[in-house]
Image (cartoon, rainbow, N blue to C red):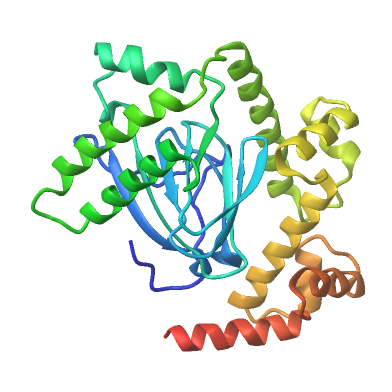
Length: 305
């Protein structure tokens, strides 16, 4: 899928579930050819979906946050993301990441032996994701299948049939080699932790304009401050307050690029009560002042028209 306009964002609900449907009931598969430079801040923000996802790094370098892990993939490598796992992508450059999603029942019907024996065990396992590296033979084979799936999307004469066959081939390789032996208890704990984290992220997103503190977040979640610090560090690799500040800065950057509001107004509307403090943090984060950022975004927008 080609995107012609800058400043795209993932559309998700209050629980960070992506709201845009992928594919259809009769063909639950969707393919996207995406350039991270065309997303807000080169980032596909936190979200999850029930579909399985495979991402291939065609060019550039991409930082992935998946579940509780963070890692970087370079050109020619890829990753599988299991159903209902929270994830986020970022690249400092114009990384191209073809990716496709499918419902588990696209591989085999839910009431079939194939589904119960070969699909459900992975869905219920502790396998949040699986990296595919060109250096490991079986993973190199998987990457080749992924490239075939990407290529066949342009062949309208057999696209759907060929995709279905290749997805089954891809799943067979994943099933044979991936480690998904640990199930249920780990998965339940992961789901519980992820749900609590999503609740706190949602609270921050809804109240970032207010004077929030660590105590406020802990009280809302009904957790101790040490627990929420551990959850944020484990899954997001940051603190709750730093997450709040970065979210405020992102919202401020959007207002700078999409409105003509005064900088002091934007500072106040995004929870910064001191404009000097806001400008100092903004420059540290974006390596330019709010005024410089607004001018740079205006230039980019005019070039895309």
